[in-house]
Image (cartoon, rainbow, N blue to C red; front, side, top):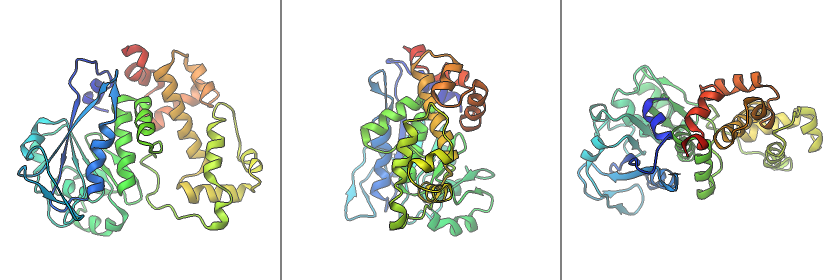
Length: 328
């Protein structure tokens, strides 16, 4: 996590919002174009907007979208030199047109792509020798065009610090919520999730393609299993107990859970406990041992291991940067 994001986490009412520039290129897909404004625009610190989102085109003129309408913008490409984050949504010829934005020359602290917008970022050279993803439909094309990129075709999004890439439309929301959590903390991202009625963001390592459960599987209702687990995060639960609670065999439970979520039940539960720990570290002054108990890790050592593996910080470091009490 870079210093820019550390500073943003401690934003005071007098600091200017973090500026996000969204580039609308000809044939832009409207859904992805609006994600940054909708989700970054909903984030607040101390009751004030945490981000200012500006949408631009190359020349400031209206842009025809991939739908049956055009969009008017408020600025031209030059505004991108004044922002903190640039977002590149997908556009109709993004897989074959290179980088008309000139991303590398902008010197922007952070660049984010949604879906096939990753082709534009890769064409700029910003992904050379780094990891990235894009929509699975364009995986072969991306791999062939950019062999110098460490391509991760199965991941929902990839965070390389100052360059982040997301897969399809829903993954773009996951990435945006991830960025908000990285900048402002898990509680702020959870507030945006509740406000927009979006589910809490999935981790970037999850699989893009999750097979739809069959009708027979739907009787197992893994959403109910997840809700049941969330209500019991502070206590140890094993596969046998979970399976018995829903009248399933352990084998059927594990198969259905992975088919619906793309991850194992154990991985999902560990991530859910880390998210609970984040909220406790941000919003309470409970000691690390108590946070470990409330989040279901049992011991501070287990909390520290899972937290560092998944967040990249120790619980104490996370609290120092994101505690709402410390910044009040």
